[in-house]
Amino acid sequence: MIYYFDTSVLVKLFVEEVGSAETSVLVLTLEQSQTDQTFVSRLVLVELAATVARAAREQRISLEYAAATQAIVRAGMPAPWQVQEIAPEVALKAVDMLKSTSCGPPMPSIWPPH
Image (cartoon, rainbow, N blue to C red; front, side, top):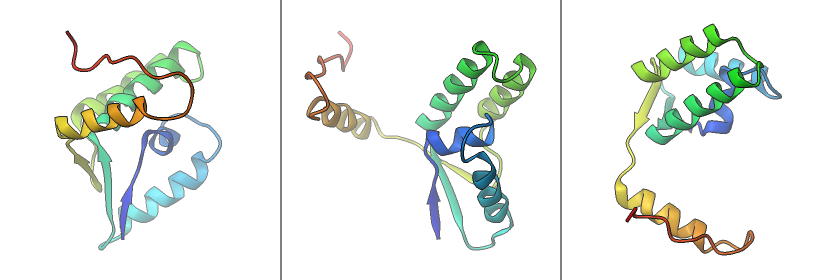
């Protein structure tokens, strides 16, 4: 099976919150699997780094733990994680989709930067 972890799930491995225990069990299972594949996008790593930094500022984790987590992110995720790159056109499409949602006022056009 193929698993994709977004930021909201991946952060549970590094910052204690609701669902952290279940996420840890799932990841341990996937680490032992010979057939499952586990993916994250490059963007998730950036979002994870930002979330961990915020948790440190809010004193939910120590600065040392945050630094260790940031080092993991900088080095790339260890096996079994496979990092998928995001093509620029995919990112632009995501921004366009956000602009067209009905979740409030239209988003201003900020991409590409001028």
